Structure formats: C-alpha cells, structure tokens
Amino acid sequence: MAQGSPAPSLMSSPPPPPPPPPPLAIGGPSSTMVSLKSLLQGPVKSPECRGTKDLASCPITPVSRSTPSPVDPEAVEVLMNFDPDPADLALSSIPGHETFDPRKHRFSEEELKPQPIMKKARKIQVPDDQKDEKYWNRRYKNNEAAKRSRDARRLKENQITVRAAFLEKENAVLRQEVANIRQELTRYRSILSKYESQHGTL
Image (tube, rainbow, N blue to C red; front, side):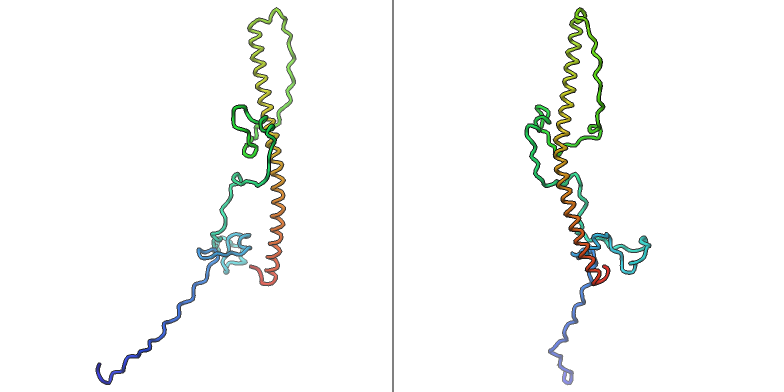
C-alpha cells in the first residue's frame, strides 16, 4: 500500500431500508377480505368514478375471487326427515321395477294437467244369438284394455299423491329457511347502517 493514501474504512454504510409493500387492491389475487357492501352491490367502482352515472366509462374492480359460483337448484338437497308409508310406496311403484322415489321423480306439465270427466258410453245390448266367438274375443280385449288403463291411472294418481306429500313437507322447511335468512339479512343491514353512520358510506 502506498504511503500517504487514506486507509479504507472498516465500517460500511448500512443498506437502504426496503421499499414499503404496495397497497392491496380489493378483489386482487392477494386480497382475502371484501366489504359486505361490495358483496351486496357487486363489482366496486374506482374512486374517481364514484358518484357518476356513466358506468360504461368507469373501470371496474373485479369482485373477490372467493365469491361462490352459481349453484344448480336441482343439485340442492333439503335436509329433512321424510319417511313415507312403505305401503304407499308399493302402491306407487310398478311391479317388478324400481321403487318409486318421491324425492327424485319429476312429472311433466302434460302429466299434471287436469283430466276431463268422461261420460260412460251407452251400453248396447247384444242378443244372445249374436254372441259368437268373435264377439267374446273382442269383449275380452276391451276388458283387458280398460283394466290396464284404470291401473295406469291409479298408479299415476298414487305417485302424484306421494310426491305432493313430499313437496308439502319440503316447502314448509324451505319457508322456514327463507324466514331465517331474511331475519339474518335484516341484522346485517342494521350493522351496515350503524357502521356507515359512524364512518361514512363504504
């Protein structure tokens, strides 16, 4: 080392402090909380566009990714106890086939239409001397067809009765759930109103 040159300093200067983390955007990938009002109103408008009526020109902040996806109503199962009489299920089931399930069975609009009352046709008396083999064969086929028609109609009526009993109970459970949800929603609205009265509109 040459004489007269200054000796290097053994103490180095401290490193600069790290930059502050960027602010979290509502609805961004790192955001885990979203306000109640944003859930009720949907996408959040940017601060410079709040109060304006021209929504088309305003950038929209996406809703939180934790928002649940739409639910298929057919996939919703109502938790309730429904134990129909086994005899009613037997009368509602086709012999030799799967037992009728009132929870899953669906009737078409055509099947649920009221049926008109049919007047019986006037009987025509046939003389005994004309009751030949052709007459008895035709009468036997008519009787069998009439019996099948009555059995099918009675089966459908039994199925509709059991299905209606299930829907009546399910409807009562759902009405109670709706009443509970409305009560809870009123409570949340009250909490939101008190918050906004103290801290301003969200």
